[in-house]
Amino acid sequence: MNQGYQPSIANQGFQPELPKNNRGSGSSSLVEKLVKGVLIIGGIIFLIPVVLFVVCLVIVYGSSIFNALPLLDFMGTGTILLTGITLMNNKKISKKYLPLLLFAMTFSILFLAGQYNVQSFNCPLHTNYQLFMPIIQLFASMVGLVGFCFNGIIPINKKGE
Amino acid sequence: MNQNKPKLVRIVGIIELLRPILGLVTGFLGAGFLSIFIFQGGNLRGIFGSSILFTILAIVSVIVNVIAFIGAIAVIRYKPIGRKLIIFVAISMIILNIVQNSFYSFSTGGLGGLFEILWIALRFFPIIYYGALIYYFMTSEVKNAFQPN
Image (cartoon, rainbow over all chains, first blue to last red; front, side):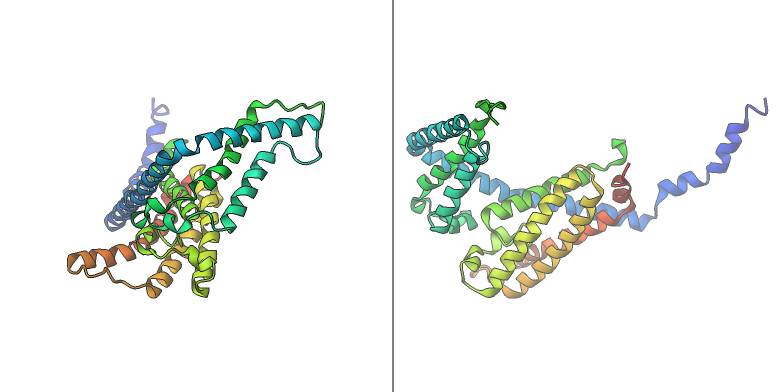
C-alpha cells in the first residue's frame, strides 16, 4: 500500500517547482502583456497601407484590364508558342525558365527606360491615375509572367534533354 | 508540439513577411511600415540620383528588407535562424527609423494641435514596435518555441 503511494510522495517533491515555473513575477507579466499589445496594435496599423495598396492596385488594374486584354492575349499566346518551339527545337538555353527570363528582360528594360510610373506607387493618396498611362507597357511585361505560369501545361520532353 | 509555439510569433512573422514585400514592391525606404505616410517624395528618387543620403538609405533598406523576408519565412516555420534574423532586422529598423526621423521634416502642412502630436507619435511608433518585438523575441517563451527538435 505504502509502496503504491510512492508516486504522490515523489509529486510532493516536485510540487514546489510547479507554481514557480508557471507563476512569473507580476511586473514582468504586465510588461509582456504590454509588449503583446504593442505588437498586435502595430500589426493592425500595418494593415492600413497594405489595404490601401491593394485598393489602388484594384483600381489601376480594374480600370485598364479591358484595354490591355488584346495585348495580353497576343503576348501570352506568343510566349506560350515561343516556349513550345524552344522546347521542340531542344535549344541549349534553359527552356523552362525562358518566359521568366523574357519577363525579367522586358520588365527591366521598361523599368530602366522609365516607362513605369514608379513615383505614383510611393504615395497612393497623391496619385493621379489619369497620368498612369504606361500601364500597357506594364502589362506587356506582365504577360511574360503569365506565360511563365502557363508554362506548367506544356509537357517537357525528358527524352529530348 | 504546437502547444508550445505561441501564435503571436506566427502573426508577427506574417506581418514581417508582408512588410518587406510591400516595401520592395513599392520602393519605400522601409524603416517601419509608417513610411508609407511619411515619404511622399518617393525614395526611389534617391536611387536615380537625387541625393547620396537617399541612395544609401534605399540600398540599406533593400538589403534589410531582403533579410526580413528570409527571416520572416524562417520565423513562420519556427526555424531557429529566423528569430535571430528578425532581431537583427528589428535593430536595423530602429536605427533606420532614427536616421530618417532626424532627416525629415515633421511638418503636417498647417494642421496643428492634437493631430500634430498624433502624427509625431506615429512617426516614432516603429521604434516602440520594434523595441517590443526585440523584447518579445528575447523572452523564454519564444526562445523555447525556436528550440531545434
